[in-house]
Figure 1 (cartoon, rainbow over the protein chains, first blue to last red):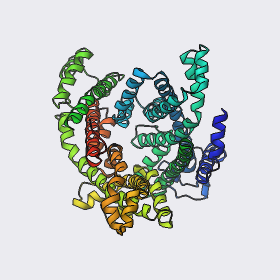
Figure 2 (figure 1 turned 45 degrees about the vertical axis):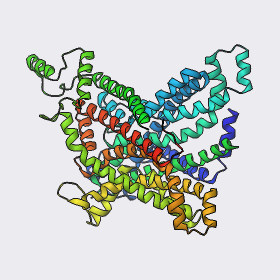
Figure 3 (figure 1 turned 90 degrees about the vertical axis):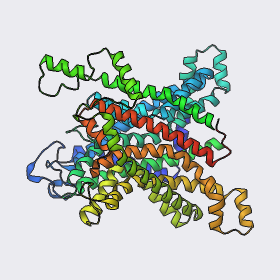
Figure 4 (figure 1 turned 60 degrees about the vertical axis):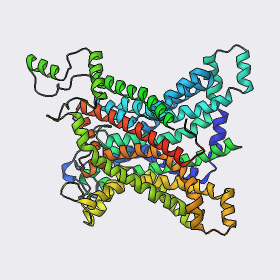
Length: 281
Length: 307
């Protein structure tokens, strides 16, 4: 774990990481805290206040949508869902990718060759269309979105982890473990995996925006999160329907989605530079 | 070279087979049949329908006959568009998507490489910083946020361009969809070009060219551009996949009767055969275009020996 702490401490020193990380943390905290404080509930339908413009009247800071629901609270709930889906999907891709890459790299030889050929083949597959197929076939269920998005994002992770494992397995402590008769499974889980933490944490920040994009893409098409639950993609979808009379219904959730993605991209960029510098040294 | 292409074509076969098998199994694992939502059918009618769509045969038999059909370009009848086969729908709708997508990629390359080169030449100036900041934003704003904003600005508020597809003509209706698809590609290619151009400009042969008194334009045009384009060429595969994905939402937003919007409508209508056919078609397309890109890479860079 100390390797992870060291990576995080160095990462916190990069200005772009500091700023984008700070903005993201603020957005996440506000999205978690504010729905509790707001006088409006996110499911309250009120036809007396349909598509009101943003303002302090009734505390509808972001206005209201076509059913008179408070957009501020709905946007915060949407951010919660979007971030939750992204984080869980990234964990799914992390687990699959780390295990797959570590096994391929550690076992090596023919197993490695076959496993990596499979990854190469999967790169050619248009996964997003598969996910749409999946959503069509198995209704639109929350859990499936996590799994589907996670399952498409593990390929890069597997490649990177394999590369790291190849160099790790030549190190003395792995050799020592092997000489002591520790089983392969235990070596991978207890000796290889923890040492991958630094690389993995960098690449997770790169997979999170991809997961956000896939989730909001699906929700935008009406294949992801379903009413009355919401996510930023679903809010943008609804916003497009009413943008001519009420542009804020589109611009506010769309802008926040873009801001979140921008921050993650800056964060990932900064962390990758840090990692590349460490690699080349 | 011919051997390389052949070998790649052969290696694509198992991938495609896997795609067909996986998506076929997925569709057939669906709970409930495709005709469950409509009014209750009498047994005789149901049996006739199932016979027509060959749903009464055992699954492996169905798969073999489906695979046989796919090999001949026949994806079976659509469940929802009566009197149309899936192949007819694809053949009818794909050309529009291809036109828009190809234009978006071409514009993405031309503008992206141009912007990236200028940024590299002015490295670390204000111009460079601004351009790269805009590019980062371009990568981050999703197509389905950017496209409606374009519609809002140029169609709804300014009335310069049409908001939809039908009723409009020629360039005017192509402009906004193509721009929406091209923007993320422009941004990404600009970043790639800038990074590789900076690298290339540091190399020895560029310094030699400078020492011989060659102007900046000639150095870029005759010496730096080709090597700096290599990462862009290898990005073309993902770019094509990205444009295809983007076309799904862009066609939806602009009401374009292309394959992407047909796919989404099919997905929302649970038109299983249509969705299945389009997924397989897209997979084959992406694999074929990736092969093309790899061959192109070998042509541009003679150091890469294609075997």
